[in-house]
Length: 283
Ligand SMILES: [Zn+2]
Image 1 (cartoon, protein in one colour):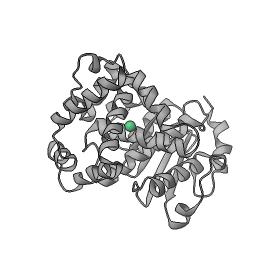
Image 2 (cartoon, protein in one colour; image 1 turned 90 degrees about the horizontal axis):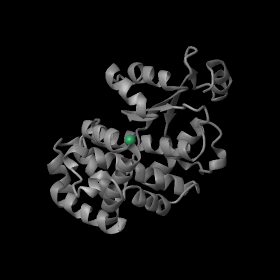
Image 3 (cartoon, rainbow, N blue to C red; image 1 turned 60 degrees about the vertical axis):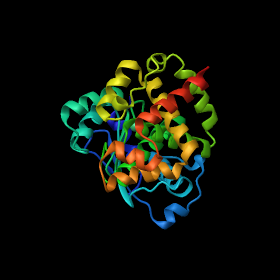
Image 4 (cartoon, rainbow, N blue to C red; image 1 turned 135 degrees about the vertical axis):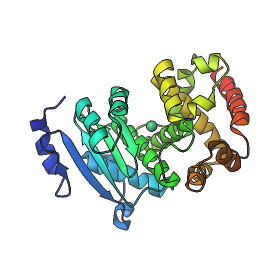
């Protein structure tokens, strides 16, 4: 982990808009997605700083995936678990108990017009860092669409965020969606929910239940399961329909009715349908 003093020169290089936290290993990066930003070509070799990467990945989301992002938002980058935990409390108004829990297993979080990242290893670049940025930016978009946090099905929020992240990596020539789909398919082969032939979307649908499940059944396979379910839904109904689904929470906060009205079947029906699909592909 880098010390605070080592991080300061990097912070100063970010530019005049950036504010280095008072010796806390914390960077505050404001973003405005204006027409000039969105017209800039995206090349991975231009990603020198995290600021470059966030701007480039935001552009891919808005321009290539037609996923709306707020006109302005702020990214916070912390240089370790402790700073990340404090940032969740001070910058994002997360309750201290939840912040302690989150910082144990998460290295990023997307909030209302906010993106909080834990640059734990001080590497801050490469495929996994860009995947994390894209994943959390997808949450920022979902929250903007729904005009609030934690409103839509949590498994779909996580699965869609992974789908977006893998599509971004593919556009950056760092990975392919097909590769991630294959990895996820073999990853869930022995997943408890699949072996029990019961996905229990009711539990996976709310933020608390999703957290409990991934702590109990393993983070990686739970996110892989969420990705495959979202991927199936997107292949069937198209990505714009999923965007419409998140937007439906702006008017009405009814998980069951919004899912049924957007996708033309109930959550219970979808659960049976996607379970049959997953069982067929893991074979
Ligand atoms: Zn997430």
